[in-house]
Amino acid sequence: MSDTDAVQADAADLDPFTAVLDYPMYVVTAAAADDGERSGCLVGFASQCSIGPARFMVWLSRENRTYRVACRATHLAVHVLRRDQEETARLFGEETGDSVDKFARVPWEAGPGGAPVLSEAPAWFTGRVDDHFAGGDHVGFLLAPVTTGPSAPPGHSRPALLRLGDVTHFSPGHPA
Image (cartoon, rainbow, N blue to C red; front, side, top):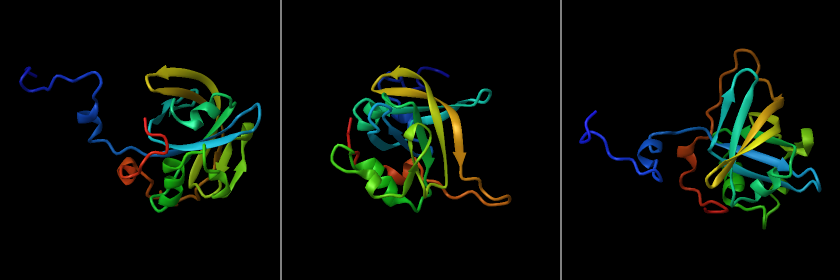
């Protein structure tokens, strides 16, 4: 590839690359181990990062209340939402727990380490926080899966999941 074929990438701008992506969105929830304070937010920076042993990495903004609670948590819960669950996505993406009790608005139950598990999520897992990694304005939480649910019946089709393209019009609760 010649210099004229490629645009010099600015280290601070991945937009030309990320503009073509449409990755899944997740709701990450946490409960602080010291006082049980709960929090949750909508995130797009997350992925399985190891097969054996199974590990999943979730990146939380340092500006987000969920980050502050997650730093004091032993476990996090990671949920996918269906495309038709936009109201739940808006709650966790546009509202801030600094002023709204998100968990008063959705059915949930406590999972391992007290991490709130959203009852209406089509799939979720809880993971033990094994490590943290600084990554600029976000911090990565390395999770070792502890529980998963619910199990889809055999032959059941996968639901259409909420993706980045479904939420780009949202206004973040904590813009960074």
